[in-house]
Image 1 (spheres, rainbow, N blue to C red):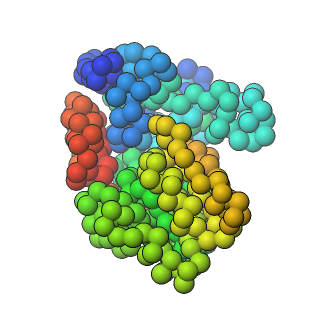
Image 2 (cartoon, rainbow, N blue to C red; image 1 turned 90 degrees about the horizontal axis):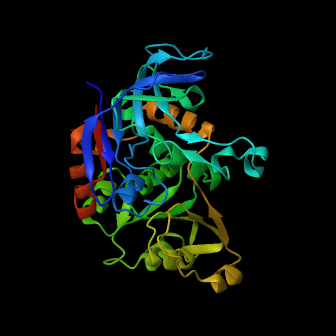
Amino acid sequence: MAQATFYEGDRTIRVGESQPIEPGPGEVQLQVSHCGICGTDLHIFHGAMDGRVTMPAVLGHEMSGTIIQVGPGVDDFATGDRVVVMPLAPCHDCPACAAGHSHICHNLNFLGIDTPGAFQSYWTVPAETLHPLPANLSLKHGALIEPLAVACHDVRLAQVKAGDHVVVVGGGPIGMLVALVAKQYGAEVIVSEINPYRVTLAQDLGLTAVNPQEVDLVKLVMGETKGAGADIVFEVSGSGAGAAIMTELLRARGLAVIVAIFAQKPEIDLFRFFWRELRLRGVRVYESRDFADAIALAAQGDLPLDQLITDIRPLGALKSGFEDMERGGEVMKILLEL
């Protein structure tokens, strides 16, 4: 029996039967293998996006799966192909799309938020969203491709290069992946994180990581850079403290990259931007090339993907996953296995 989890508002998750949707022209039907629980999913569980989602809502977008049915007109994929989904459906008509930036489409439809997602046995999606997985990349690791693509996009747009001094403020799943990808580019990386478990995990992954409540982060960075400051700071914490400290950490003409979504508009030291001619860059989701880069990077086997997976649970454990994420503690990435 096909199953799905349904968000029904007021922190309510129901597990029930789902009806598979036959793929139409240009679509495929996937049997979902694994799907990660994202911070955005948790945001929805908290009710913060009730005005956007249509309830009962099937969430989930960090997934991997296998094609079990192909709709008319789909020639590039076949039944049995192992794939991941880049969960963006742009309008192809707005100014951003016309300029070649369809990932920030003015009318972007995000699969798993604006339409039903991957926390279900069978998921029907446009074939244009698919990326094939190589044979040596497991479906388990495939479920990490979407957040890894976020990191690849962020690091690429920041133009990280070998020898750069990079600070990542916030050591959650995205921050940790940004740090690991930046290190792959040859950067010297410091992760700032207040959760002791995540600090230790980052250190175990070969990263320099500190708790800014225990260590003077500005003093550390200035010491590492002979007083110059970091070349690039990725703000991934979404906190007022993170927004405040990023300007203090940067060298003259350094780059601040805003990765996090802030719940409230933060205060930012614009005087510091003037005084040191700092640069500010926003980064949002990913482009197709970032998915390709993420798949290639994961397939190389150099990233410690297994260590980022805290737990693998059945579909019915979605709510317990949310609750564990809320409590913090020893949690990085929880996958649901369907």
